[in-house]
Image (cartoon, rainbow, N blue to C red):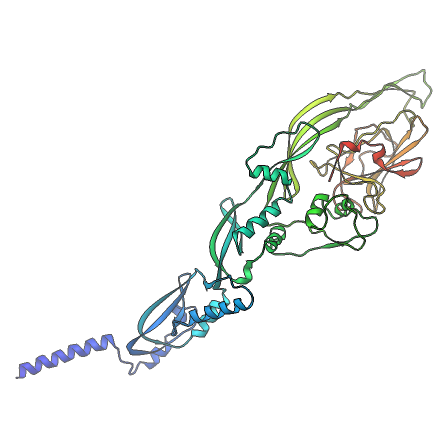
Length: 512
């Protein structure tokens, strides 16, 4: 009898110990339980354990990138919030978006004896505040050197493809684009002119299914196109057209090419289009997050200048007299270049071929002592190598000259357009560093004077120096009132300003 009682007592004791281990008593431990703060140990939302339950309850643990956000007491709350947000989108005509949780979120449902304090609304606020209720969409990543440089979310791949094609075609001839798209090879130029030969992106584009907040999604082709032009910081500048303005003049004064101005303003169709006074033009340069690289061939006839003339003293001639023994003559080369543009800006070039068409002839002059004036035939060249024109005579109101650039060397050398004597080497607020060079009279008795403006530094030679055509006399610059490096040439005939291209061989120049 005693032995049986002992067994019963021992059995009860073991059972009591087991119960205590599984269901520990709260007696005397309420303070310890209240002090448990899950947020300090494992939870992103502050949430305490209030008590223990003899019966396990179902809870939902919410994790963000592997970290516990908190414990939901109402496991259906997330689904209800998603349904509410879906209904809100439907009211705003976004019925084709499907709302769900970010892929960075996962939930685990389990049963627990712990009784957590109710922090359901705080957990939902965390998810909402961190943009973790998302719409199913497409993520577009732009990679360079295997690193993601930019990421956008778009409504559809088709919209993105259409916008990208439109953006790329702003920098390349449309016919060439379609030929390249069809795998055709563009043959080399065999006549003077320019042509695009290739276009590609510096970035690799990767598309994948993803989720994003609706406010982050570019939901139209137009929105995607704007982003491709300017990225996220879209701060546009506009110009109001004035009387006598031309597309070329507006572009030149705002650091753009005519083609770029046309691309930025869809209402402009042609470089020769007449502008309307008061018309608003977007003059914001592309600040694209991606780089469109265009390769273009340029086949051009370029002037080659003779060496500096030979001056031979003739004692039979009066002092100050000058006689042409051998007239200097320019030569010509046919050159083929490949130019590389990044988002419409020339970034480099390479010369593919060069053919001598006519060699230059070095001039020989007989002088009594030294030349002070010259009377005879006057020939004109161009003021820089690889000369291109950015703004013609009266390209805008008051522009009484022609602006030339060297697209291959923005701060390249300035060349003497013709023979003459430097009569002024000075600086002014409008022209910056400038020359005035007297070219003398031609056979018809017309006197010529030329002004060279905006040079980077003062001209290389002092007043009184006799310069010859093709001689390096300065450096292209942007001093004075100028929107970018160029050399401004003005021509005065008998003291009256006239269009320099009447005399200079501007037909050899491209126009930007």
